[in-house]
Image (cartoon, rainbow, N blue to C red; front, side, top):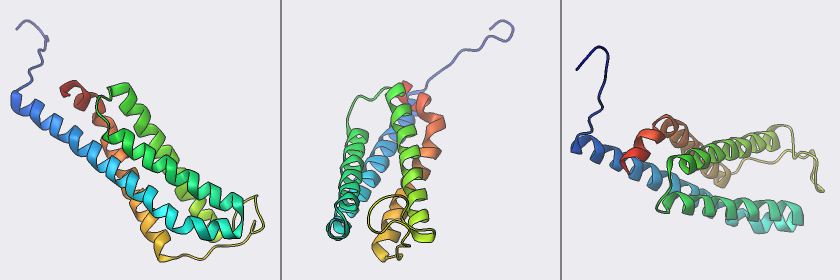
Amino acid sequence: MHGNARTETHSPHGEAHERSNLRRLRLSAGALAIVAGLIHPWVTPSHFAEWWGYGLFFAVVATIQVTYGGLWLSIGLDANRLRLLTALGIVGHVALFVLYLVTRTSGIPFFGPSAGHVEAVEAVDVVSKAVEVVLTLVLVAASPGIDELERSE
């Protein structure tokens, strides 16, 4: 080897480990998003009863989360799509968490008959937010290694 030239070697063990990490990331992100998406339909009917806009919001969030989870579980995502999916998940779930905090401290913003009303914290809320926070942490922790994970796929 001359000077500072560097060659990369990929041992079969290292590549297998990276494939295993990508598999775990996909399973974790996919499962957590689907679980979050399956929690929202439990509260959707009560929100529809309050106002159609609140119910629609929960129905749309549930659909997006289940679809998002399905995308993570799908095969053949390259590094660019993984980065995009990761960024969308982080931004979307942080936005949902912030909205949740606002509705529990300052009140429902802007729309519907309960605008300004502070919502009560319920057990299903806590479970939903816990799943979404864990999903967000998984995505944040995984984002720096997506290129390496994708190369081994």
